[in-house]
Structures are given as structure tokens and as C-alpha cells.
Length: 177
Image (cartoon, rainbow, N blue to C red):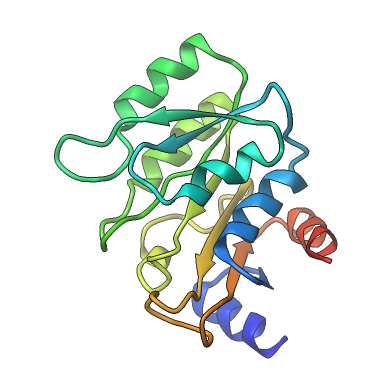
């Protein structure tokens, strides 16, 4: 679609899928990775409910991570400690909050070390998210919202998922039907 092409160019991601919400993007990305019962994922304690329920829809269990003492983002010190003890953690869903962006370089480094799928919740960070990471990271996706209270809206509803992983994008497109 025209929207997907414009977003792809702006975000510098090869694949953008327009969806009905950011929640749909988060849910379908995890579903496309075939995660399910017994699998776990990291999510911050300070977040919107969909960051947690997107994995629960699939039978996954959230591993809630406290916030950094100097802000509202996920404290990466807890993440690696928990990964050393629990190999069922398959994904991390960092949420950008209030104009503050997660340290994606460190998150990607941890993801590489432990084989995690990185799925950013950027519902409030469309404009800033492109400046915070190496977008060539392949096993990664990022979800956006166009809800009425977001920075960019689409008359009340909408969202998108961006990724450089063509296989993941194709699977999300099929699942979105």
C-alpha cells in the first residue's frame, strides 16, 4: 500500500505491514515466530497491557523486568541475570516510553548472545525509533500505533509492523488476514 511504502522509506526498513493496531503487530510477530506454551518473553513492568497480553494470547508467559532506577525503561542488568537461569525465554519486548528510548545496541548484543527475538513496542516512538539502532539487525521487528492519542494518527485506529526479515513479514501478512 502507499502507506506501507512511505513508512518503509521513512523508517528505512525493507518490510512494513499496515495493521489495525500496535497490539496486532506485537501479537502477529510473536505468532509468526511460532512461539507458544512454555515459551517466555521479557516485558517491562511499566507498560501498556498489550505488551504483555500479546504473548499471553499464544500461551507464552511474561517475565516482567523492573525499570531502570534512572528512568522508566527496562533495566538490562536484570535481563542477563534471568537469562542465565531460564533458557525458555525466547523474546524481549522493550517499550520506548515518554520520548525515552531503550538502549537497543545493548539489547541486540544480549539478543545475539542468548538467541532472543527482539520485538520493540514503539507505540509512542515512531519518529525517534529510527535513530536508536542498527536496522540491519535481522531477527528483529518493531511495532507502531496510530491510535488517536499517538504522535501520528489514522482517524482513531491503526498500526504497523516493520522488519528487515522478509520471511517474518510474509508470515505476518498471511496471519493478519
